Image (cartoon, each protein chain N blue to C red):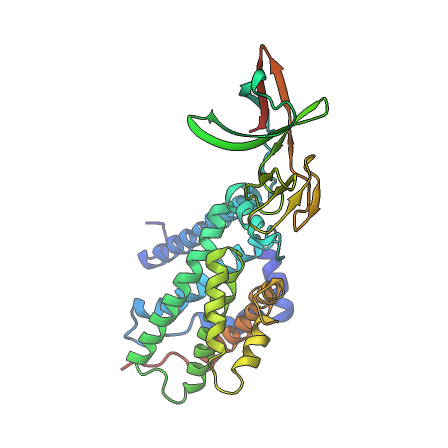
Length: 215
Length: 156
């Protein structure tokens, strides 16, 4: 294993650029509060892995979605565990992003020159919330359906454009199979890709700028 | 202490190894979980079990009779509704569950149809769909007559 890695490293010189980041000196007053973002990232990794597994059993169709989720929880071995991990990681992700934000606010780490990183982080929160909202519809049960009815109805209260935004989100006047497939596509493809891109930007900005010295 | 190395060095070596093995263990556990998850679950063979439904004398001479049956399975009382139909010289049982979404259908003696109250599915006396959303006819259930008792077969 080590031989293979060193073979690749010799040709592409990958480790030196990362070593300077991973083995750099950190500011003196660090605490476990600086791990909150890392915890959130770990949850994202768990969500991606468990989501990839769920996607092999889930069927995003009007007639099949509910039954496929029942099948995952009742028939597939460890299916309940994987689904529970996905659900709880999603809940905890929002919590840890907020705690991470709170830490950044308290330490005033959002200030220039790091304001763009704050914006990237905030956009990550928006993507996480959107993923939560779209993912909530996918079990296609009563709770999922009505939560999405209420949630999408909120869009219609926007003046002038509300009705059009509602139609755009639902893909029709009512929540239907079109909405389900739409939310599924956003949930498993669009949002994870956007999240990956944003996190890449987020981490590289830290790499360039270093951790804020704190208070 | 290992010869030629300072305590700090051995400590670092130990921690490096510890982290490496921890991640290895985690990876192994995760791989095992993935394989278990992806491997098809054993398909349970559903066996046919007969429960007494009614006395042979109580069979309808002609037409449809609604029977609410209660049977016990794994110490739980289960209820089900079936229609016993006598048509000509044939006797058969139809499940009352609508094939659309599982509502219980009713027999309309006046219209001579099974009518689902939920979405208006209609079936004829044989259980075939006449109109409405049901995708399949009413399910026929096997009957068995023995010693004057009619039993019905349920897959459990």
